[in-house]
Image 1 (cartoon, helix red, strand yellow):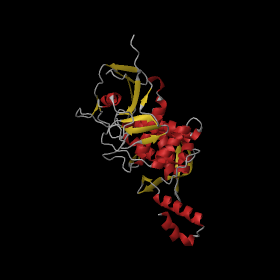
Image 2 (spheres, one colour):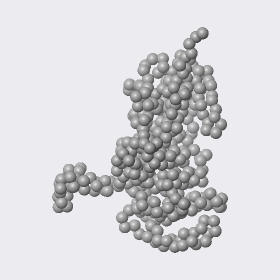
Image 3 (cartoon, helix red, strand yellow):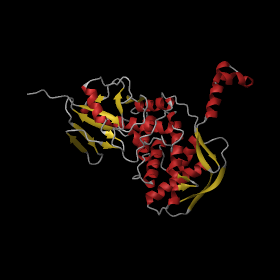
Image 4 (spheres, rainbow, N blue to C red):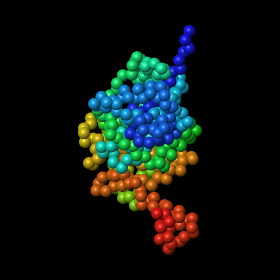
Length: 376
C-alpha cells in the first residue's frame, strides 16, 4: 500500500499591496513574487505554490502576481491543514489593513488600499499532484476540490494598483496588541474592534451606507467600551481622546431619537456635536426610522468618512493604554472652514521631542535654540 502523502496549506493575500516583508504579531507577510530569497526552498514545492498563486488573474486574465504569503516568523509559509491559526490570521490581516490605510496620506487616490487588498485565502494541496482544495464560506462552509487550480479573477472593486504605506511605530504597536490580546483587555478591544472596522472598510457596493455606519458604531463601541448610556458616553470619550486646545462650546439640544422630544440642553464642542449626530444616526437606523441621503451627512461631509477620521485617532490613543506598547500619538482632528480633517500632529511631535531633549540636558526655556537643533 503506497504511503500517504503529506498535505500542506498555504495562507495568502491574493491582491496584496505589500512591496516588502512586514511583521504583524506572530506572522510575517511577504510578497511572493519579489521576495529574495523566497522562504519556500527552490524546487517542486515552490513551483507548486507558484502555480496556485498564478491562478489569481487581473481583468485581462493574466496572472496578477500581487500575492503575499503569510507565515509564522520562522516558517516557510506552509501550515499543516489541521493547525492553521485561522482567527489569528484574520486578526493580523485586519491590523495590517488598518496600518496601511492609516499610513496613507491620501485615502482616495489611484494607489489607495482598502480591506479587500488584505483578504486572506487558504489553499490545501498535496505535493506532487495538481489536486487542490479551497475552503470558503462563513455561514455555509464550502469545500471546493479541483484536479487543477482554477483561475480566479480580481473583482472590479479590488484595486490592483494599491500600494501599502506603513508607519513603523504603528506596525510595532499593533503587533504588541496581537501578541498581548489574550492577557491585556485594552489590546483585545483594539484587535476585536479592528475586525469589525475591516468589514466596514471594503470597497464593494454590496455594503451600503447603512451597514457601514452600523459597523463603525460597533467598532467604536468595542474600542471605547461604551457604558449603559452609549450616546452620552460616546460624546465624552470622543472629547477626551480627540479634543484640541481651547475648543469652543455651544448649546446643543439632546433629543430622544424615537419621539423627537428634547431631553436637555448641553454645552458641546463641535466634535461632540458630530459624535451626538453620528450616534443619533445609528439609533435611527436601528429603530427603523425613515432615512434620506442627507441623513448620512454632517454638514458637507459623509458620516462614514468622519467616523473613520475619528476612529483613526481613537485607535492611536487607545494603543497608549496597552501595557508594553510605547506608541506615541500626536495625531488629532482639526476643524477648519466648518469641516473636519486629520491632523498628523507634526507640531506636537516636534514640541515633545524638544521638551524631552531640554529635560535631558537640563536646559531652561532660554536654551530652546540648542534643543531644537539637537532634536532635528
